[in-house]
Length: 293
Ligand code: NAP
Image 1 (cartoon, rainbow, N blue to C red):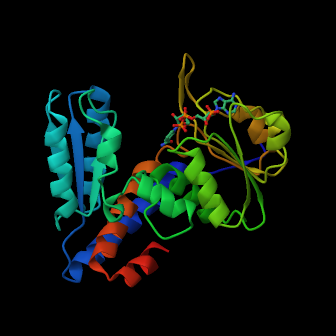
Image 2 (tube, rainbow, N blue to C red):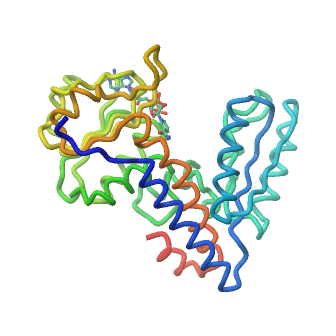
Image 3 (cartoon, rainbow, N blue to C red):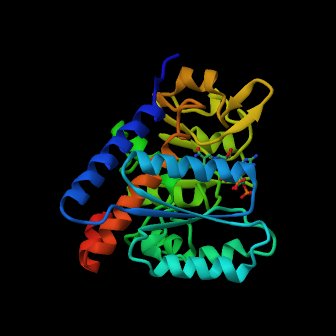
């Protein structure tokens, strides 16, 4: 293997340690500890595990967890009232509505009620708009985790050719906006892209966020490129990414593994966002802009 590994677990731990220290300093100055409110409607076991992991990670860094659980048959109006209450509560720095919600609850409409300053998932239309316009705001956790990895490895982005495969609201689209903000020349590919291989071979930074096991072969990788694999696919041979790791690692300069690459970054960036949100809400609007940048 020619490529150097990007160790997402280690970088995520560094971020968590920094957030822990940042929370301690914030509290030592007489501020309230940041509070992360999670809202889980219903009893989906997978969602319960996600929420539990977020609450556990919060507690480890000194963020106060405000864990709200509503029954499977909770009416939309009840969840809406809770979100509105959390939106106005000073104790709450960030709000996470776990999706998907049961059928009677319109999760998308409720997500839009989360104020941009508390949108620690960075996925509301307002946050997406701020990002699209290059204005300060909270950024989605997985894409900002990718940026953090590139930053820590000092991957040059200015003027670099960046290719993102995938255009979801969760990963591809916001990541393209973040790379653009870092002055990369960004190409976004999707299921209708012609000759994907030829586009990928141009990339100094190649990101795959598709959800198709090993779809990016090594021959699509420009020699020396940085390859970031966001994909998480469960197969008979275990968890694999969207990149054929073995062949890609022969040509790449830097590459993320799956598991242990982008995966661990998401929760770490959620914690970072929660601390940023707490600081920004306590500061003046001008100071808030500075904190986000
Ligand atoms: P998604 O919403 O399903 O989007 C997939 C994207 O891939 C779409 O834009 C789609 O194009 C594109 N695509 C599908 N087939 C393609 C093909 N043959 N060639 C080129 N593009 C193709 O998925 P997502 O939510 O972005 O997630 C992508 C992957 O990342 C999944 O494996 C997911 O599990 C993983 N993920 C990981 C993390 C993490 O590590 N923490 C977080 C989120 C997601 P169209 O738009 O044309 O349909």
